[in-house]
Amino acid sequence: MTLTFDEQPSDLYSSPYLVDYYDLVAPNSRSVDDASFYWDVYQKLLALRSPTPEDPFVIMDVGTGTGRVLHGLESNAINSECEFVNTELIGVDNAQHMLDKAEIITTGILKDVVSWVHGSALNLTEIMDPRKHQKVDLLIFSIGSISHLSERGQPEKFLDQASKVLRPGTGRAYVSIYDGSLLNPNKKIAFHQPQGVSEIRSVVFPSIVYRESDHRGELKGNVKFVKFELEVVNSENQSVLETNHISMKMRQWMEDELILLSSKTDASFVESIRGAHETFYVFKLVTETESQ
Ligand SMILES: C[S@@+](CC[C@H](N)C(=O)[O-])C[C@H]1O[C@@H](n2cnc3c(N)ncnc32)[C@H](O)[C@@H]1O
Image (cartoon, rainbow, N blue to C red; front, side, top):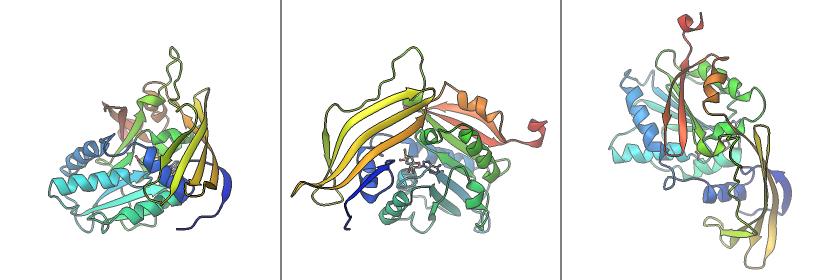
């Protein structure tokens, strides 16, 4: 793949090099094993109904990125010697470069049952309406990615959209809030930035090195602004192929705030479950009796 010189303000997902860098530094199946948790949830929900080819079990992974969680479910399926019988998987993301990589690296049993769909967490009905099977049995928003919904009202909009696509009765949405995104007024927020300049070598693009510098973090209200510079460098001749001014806004949370926000939506809070680095909040579609 040949990429041209470019200079742009961006998030971490908006060029093939950035996607590669994200996969190098982001949590992976060795550092976070949430897929085993979601696999157990899938088995539990499967037991509640018998999906058929006409009415399959639908798993939707919102903010799927390069498909880490769905690939993790695939590994669990292989380990349990279980195919994805009568199951359809949908990986949704609003960054096409992430989906492009997800598609390229999907080669195993997942390939025949997954679709990688460009779309927004804020408009899930637009994704499901044209599909043959429109109800979602298990919706996942993993690893604190809901923090990307940093504008006022967006988490509520997502919960409303999630409830619209969930299968009434048995459908469940599992939304993760990462421990590192909790607001704690008594503690100074740490941004875990490397000091000075650091370099990471690409394993996908030969001779490419990612040079990361000038990390800045600032908390304004409940939004953390994370900024740093990321150069894509050809290590053979030191030419800079891309200069990215990374700028991300990540919502921070009060403990259990999502439960409070959900009370203004059609999503009904079911339970919260503690994970190793996160809390999973479980929602279902609010029933008529609950809404009265
Ligand atoms: C932290 S990454 C998580 C990727 C993957 N789910 C994982 O667990 O490794 C967050 C992902 O959410 C996507 N994203 C951010 N805002 C989104 C939105 N409004 N709708 C859909 N995807 C979104 C980003 O493009 C990115 O791929």
